[in-house]
Length: 170
Image (tube, rainbow, N blue to C red; front, side):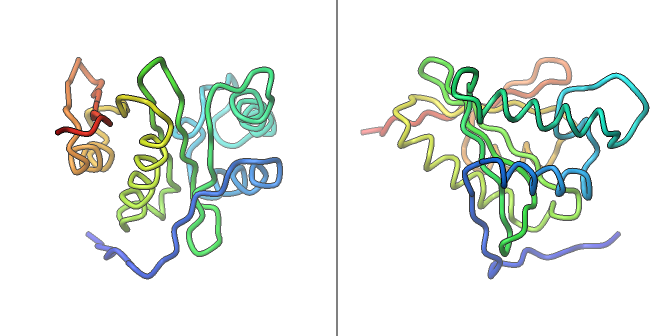
């Protein structure tokens, strides 16, 4: 088993998604992720087919870039200036839902923790009352990140839901 230690000196930034960022994000996804890790399923053969690449672009344009249909804020996760994944916040009433995906070779290096801290800060400034996220029981990395934030966790079959109050306790 190989252990890759966290590298604290790496610069982790969130770059707001735009068309140029979307192209970089697609390149990162194709190079380092399975399509089912980063987008809804698309019929057809496995892997990054041309149809799946187009669906990835259409998905992000609809959810983030098109003002008429946008429902979330999405950022490219840059590590030392290179696209490594995506982060998002989506408002649902008083809640703001967070989501992250990182390329497989970027996981386990402390990047997710830094991204969650940045998302939590953005969520606090959004006026939302709760920070929420969901994952699966098998996603130990995400569960560890959410537990580390102090989120309350609930499990329903294979789904794990996390919630963290953004209200100042006093």
